[in-house]
Length: 252
Image (cartoon, rainbow, N blue to C red; front, side, top):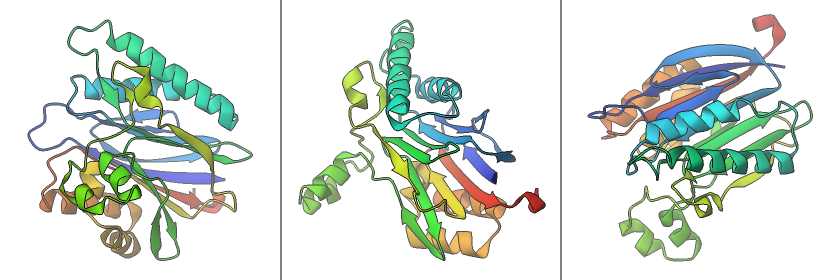
């Protein structure tokens, strides 16, 4: 099975460095756009370096670089162990850099092996699946806002910092990775189109808006339009859009 990965990562307004990074097969992207066609097994991951901590850009790139070395064929349990080891390595690396000891990043990754698809998620980067003309959010944000909603405190969720995360790689303490979730996904078959975003995009565009953009445009144009609309809506953060299309061999 072959896949087309269309990606656009754009540095936020007024930012010196881009904290968002992505792993697309074996290629690591940061503050750039492009398209990659590859056959499975495959890894598609996105990380959003925590902007309030120095070294967010380095943290996301570090995790993408280590994730690229995870074996193509891996079990759910072994993937969990590998990601926790990457987290320990990030904390050790950060501890050697004065002022960057708490560097951290979110992580959302789709690992397509020959036998199954595994989803790993920590933080508030997102994975969506296109089901017909509808877009379904597969991940749940690990944020204080979402936690308040889940515990029945919707009013408090409305006034809290919606970007405050509950889970991340790094941060100077292994406890921050505890919300990490790794599980099989798409057990009935991969959707034809998958979307991954950082919060610089999905905090400013609704699922309905992204559905319309995907339905009315090619993947390449859709990635560009989503970021343009997010910025127009007020996003000053780094913006990442990754669109993975399942394609037949005849279209390669």
